[in-house]
Amino acid sequence: MDRNRTVAGLDVHKDSIYLCIMRHDETIIFEKTYGVLTPELRQMCNDMTDRGVSEAAMESTAVYWMPVWNELCESMELKLVNPYFIKQLPGRKSDVKDAQWIAECLLKNLIRGSFVPEPIVQDMRKLNRRIMDLNEDMTYNCNKLDAALQRCGFRLSNYVSTIKSRSYQSVLQAIINGITDPEELVKMVHGRTVNKHGRDTVKAAVSGLFSKTDITVFRQVKEVIDTIERQIEECQKELTALCREHFPELYRRIQTIPGVKERAATAIIAETGVDLKMFATAACLVGWCGLKPRNDVSNGRYKSRKVTHGNRYLRQILIEIAWVASRTRNCFFSNFSYIQTTVKKKSKMKIQVAIARKILVALWHMLSKGEDFIDIYLRRLEEQKLMEEKLKSLESKMA
Image 1: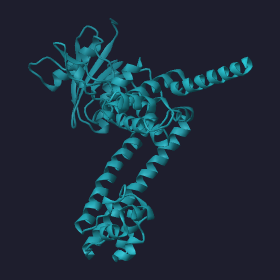
Image 2: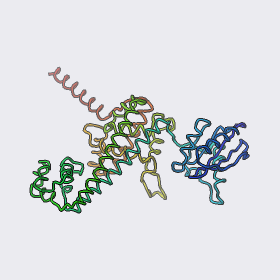
Image 3: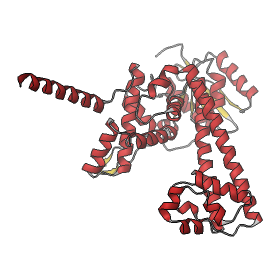
């Protein structure tokens, strides 16, 4: 053990921070409670550096650890710890003892820090997660708008694929503008929808009793949806610009994976970053994402094979990529999906999780080795085609 080593443990809360500084011989040399305002954080940083602290560890408590991290990261080596991995044994517990326990665990090298990306990637994360929050708000408000229309007897959503379709939006805008005559509204519905369900059915679907108050509600909810769409576009444009400026080659390389385009590529870079040193193997990255099935076995019986907890933002985008990749013609993932779901009759949802895990493993190898995605299925098809051409040429020569 390094005899000149001095470490600190921080127990972070919403309105207070408990600091414990410990020497190499496990002697506590300083303990104090600080507030969470910026001047107090700077004073805490000065107190730590004055006492020769070279390493510090803190629990990942909600978002309260982020200002502390930003204030200390340039002065010492920091580790962010999942509270689950440093839980104390049952007994008397206090915030002061928690800080002492964290410092002691750090001193004995029992702490492995969580993945904290560089500042530019953290900014990209903020944009990516803002987009995901806006998408949730979009879904909520779209459902609210359709429910308001349904209360008036408007049933067009029963006959179109989505309420974001051009037909639905055209009819909605006409109603907001004061046009409620079914004969006029049915003209705005796409011809394929009218031919498929019949003109009389579609006409009945767009008929309803719309009061002035209802139209006001429609207009206000649509304005909210339009605002959300504009904000999503703005965030995505800024996120894409950051990717192209700081990680242009990585941004291009990730899009070689089937099912990955601009939105998915930017989301992957924002969540994983470019430095995968924290993930020694692909299995570590899969576990961090939460796509690894849990190993819960007792007496030879599997109690649960559900995926573990992890980065839900990355997991969500990977599942979406998996659905697209499973529908992409002539690629490994669509062939795998067909064999598992159609031939072996396995659950389609479970297979999408398996495809997402395979995509993440491929991503780890691509980022670690600096290579583009290589589709094994396409390579086999090309090799098979070359063999067939050689056989044909041999047969023609022998003939």
